[in-house]
Length: 161
Image (tube, rainbow, N blue to C red; front, side, top):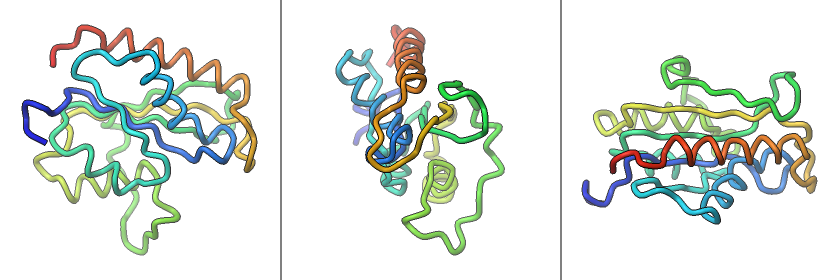
């Protein structure tokens, strides 16, 4: 992809569509596609393919990652983490593809992309209620997803490409 074609912001939805609220990232990406993206914004379904996520970050100034979390907070709670808070990334040694998460994708991207690593990384995490196989999104997570869609579209509308 040439520099002229590169988006200024890439939103990556991470998670597993088959595991209840863990689907929040890919579902958010689909919802943003349905609503329409501002110019210069692109979405990628990170699903469970973390290494592909790292390659998609190459040369993009701002990357936004969205995923579910289980911190013990109220389901549907929304957390925003600036990239500077996730600088202590997990080691890649001994990692396998089944355990590859968004934080591993960031660590891999730092190693792989070096100077082409995004200057700004923002992580949004939504507290899950259920991660059971076959469950749909829970009502609090679905509501948080809609709030985050509104927030992202408002913040990114009019940002120069």
